[in-house]
Amino acid sequence: MADYVLLYSGGSMPETEEEQAAVMQAWTSWFETMGPALKDGGNPFTGQATTISGDGSITDGAASASGYSIIEADSLDAAVDLAKGCPVLQGGAKVAVYETFKVM
Image 1 (cartoon, one colour):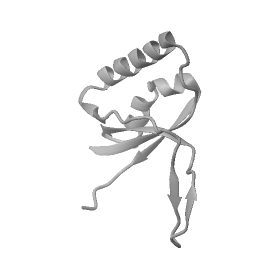
Image 2 (image 1 turned 45 degrees about the vertical axis):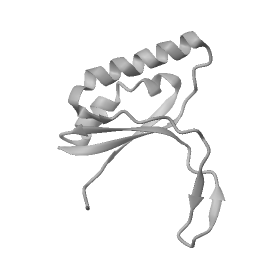
Image 3 (image 1 turned 60 degrees about the vertical axis):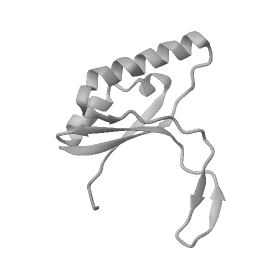
Image 4 (image 1 turned 45 degrees about the horizontal axis):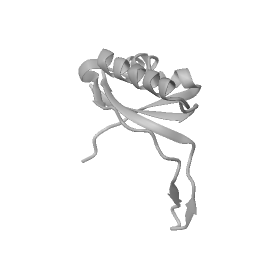
């Protein structure tokens, strides 16, 4: 088993209270279907970011990531299968699935 980071980018935010409630219910349902595979449900990003380059220079802004989750799966294919149910896809976002490995 390995850990996988689901990195979300793009998509739209719900505007009304009803839309927000529906989205939160979709996330809750998706998290429940994953059971113990869900290690960290994550959070959305605010959009406020700073990027530090290798030369030490600092600029405002970052890549277009909008949030993350961390899951555990037997393989990249299995992680992708779990990610296919992510509610962020319904809002037009994309999900990149990255396998991690322990170095410490």
